[in-house]
Length: 132
Image (cartoon, rainbow, N blue to C red):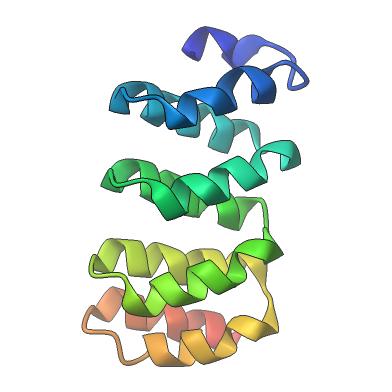
């Protein structure tokens, strides 16, 4: 997968997105890492699906970051839910950060709720984003 990094962006998405569903966690991690570096709008649906279905923490975290970098407004609802309901505080924090990058006002209620998070860094990130 990493051999594809120097290829033209037109080649990468169709070749790499299929690895997001591979049984091998290392392949999935390599695929999501490459896709998050390339930031191709054609991959956003696959990245969103990876965030929703993936069990491995590292892969979910990279998917969340990619959704924020891509400013994927279609991901706002799932990021809002995860920013509040996700058991892992690092995932919640990254969801808050990505919501801030996306910049959709629909996320304001979730960001306000994140001000009450058990984890201080999540609270601080939400506060910073809400202050604009």
